[in-house]
Length: 238
Image 1 (cartoon, rainbow, N blue to C red):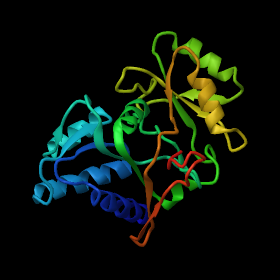
Image 2 (image 1 turned 180 degrees about the vertical axis):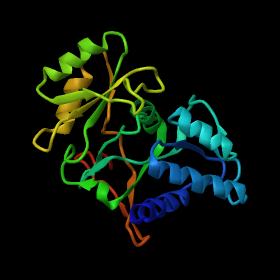
Image 3 (image 1 turned 135 degrees about the vertical axis):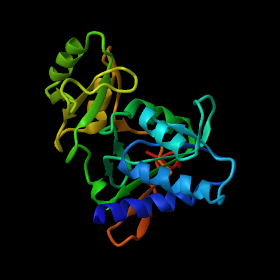
């Protein structure tokens, strides 16, 4: 319950960033779903008008439509994307995402957004990526076993993600996902680059997309907002 309080607090704070007429990217995952629910409630109460949304998964799209939100295809730059994360590394706000299986669409939406905001509970904050969660990798279905063996050859422990009913988890794009346990001793950015460079790999869950802010909720319902330090060029981001 304390996690739900923290997640809901972060989600509610993020809804305050939405303005009339915006196109909003909807993330996938439990915290992002709380944002979706809070946004739908604002629209239902007519506190927000003319909000359109781009969903990062078929499940999120269906939920949004059922709650009265308008879903559109991604064709142009969007105003704001709000999503959760599986790990957020301090202080630079680098991310691992994709345990919900939507990492490719999440990354596309994040890169298409003028503003990219992450909402998490405080347990998602880490000093180094890969401490608690694996690095998800979506690979093309054709030759998947071959690509998987090449990932293993990098020296990482990896496995196809299994569905609860048996078989492999298949993304909305029709591809399997491999979870790579990189561990705290491995540099997630470097491993992400090496894996992503392989033919057959579509994308990894390492996110270096600029994050405007990370909204962190705690179990008392309070929130704090983290902003990445400026890089050498004076541009805020990761």
